[in-house]
Image (cartoon, rainbow, N blue to C red; front, top):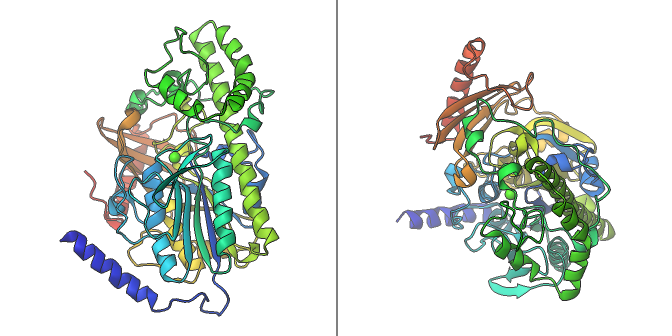
Length: 513
Ligand code: CA
C-alpha cells in the first residue's frame, strides 16, 4: 500500500513537472548540459586546488580555476552508498532510506536523473554505482558490478554482463565520452562515477613507477593514541592494524609468515591479478620487484608500518593521477566540440578519506578528513571564474543546485539548498552556519554517531555500540586531538551546541535514537 502511494506520488510529481518539458530555459537559451563527475574516496589533501603538498592535479584544478572551488564542502554521512543516495535525492539518509552500505537503494523515489529526464534531458550513468538495486531514471547506464575491478573491468551494460579492455578509469571515461558524443545535440545529464582511488588502490600500469622517488612525510598525528576518544579506540581502520601486506601493500606473501595477511586477502588480490594478461602481469611484477626486496629487509613492526604508509601513498596517488588525466580528457572534449560554455561540470568525491591522519586510511568518522569532500564546479555561462567559497556546501546541495542552474524547479521536499547565489555572487547571507551529520554503519569497528559543526566547534555523539560525547575547539585544535566535552570551561558551549543540534534534527526530521 505504501509503495502504491509512493508511485502515485511520483507520477503526480512527474506529471507536474512534465507540463513544461522542453529543451529551452525560461530565457529561451538552450538548457545547460550537466557532467557530474565523482571519484570514490578522493581526499581533498590529494588535489592541488586544495593543497599541493602531495600531488599536482592540473585538470581538476582547472575546473575550480574556471569556476568555483568549494573550500568547505562536507558530506552528511561519510561512506559510499549513503553519500551516493544523498546526491541522487537531495535528502538525508534517514529520508532516502540508504543509511549504510548494506541496503538496496529504493529506486522508486524521485531522483535527480528522473527530474532531468522529465525536462527533456537525455540521462546516463557510467562507472561505479554501488547502490545494489537496478539504476532508475537513466536512458543509458553501464555500471561496475559492486566495487568493480581496476584492470580489464567487467561492466553491466543496461543489465547485460560485458567486459572491456583497459584500465577502469580510462574505460569509464571512454564510455562517458562515447555516450555524450551520441547525445550532444540534446541537453544531457551524465553521472560519471570513477572507482578510483578506492581501496585497494591498483594503479594504471603506465604509472606503476611514479612517486618511487618521493619519500612521504608521516602526518604529525600519525601516531595518535586516541586518548579521550573511545570510538577511535575501537575502530579497525588504522594503518597499523588494518592494512594488509598482500592486498593493500601488494607484497607476494602467499608463503611468508607475516601476521599482516588477512585470511581473505590472497584470494581477493588474486581475483584482481587474474584480470591482467600474462604480459601485463610481467610489467606489474617488474615494477614491484624492488618493493618485495624492501619488504624482506624490514626488521620490526614500526618499520613495517612506515613502509606500508609509503606504499599506500604511492599507489593511491598513482590512481589519483589517472583520475586527473581523465578529467583532462573530458574538459578537452568539451573544448573541442564547443560545449564547454554551456556545460556544468562538477567534480567531487563521495566523501573524504584519511591519508594517514590519526593513523587511519578509511572514512566514516565526522572528523574533518573524512567529513569534508573536494567539490569544484564550473559553468562558464553563469558562474564567474576563480571563486574560492568558504560557505558550507554539502553533497545534499548537489541536486537542488544542478536543477536550479538548469532553470528547473527544485522539489519542496529536497533538504539541500541551491548554491546558485553562492556560486554567482561568491556569498549568500542566508546560507547555513552549521552542518548536521549522521553516520550509521558499524562495519570496520565503526560507531554510529551524529553531530554538528559550526565555524568554531564540533560536537559529536557516538551512540552505538559505545556511547560518548566529543567536543572540539577547531580554532585551537584543528586536528581534533583534544576532546573537551568534560572540560568545565566549555560547559556553556556544550549546552548551546546541544540546542543547535536538536534544532537541526528537528529541521531535517531525523528521528534520532
Ligand atoms: Ca567512497
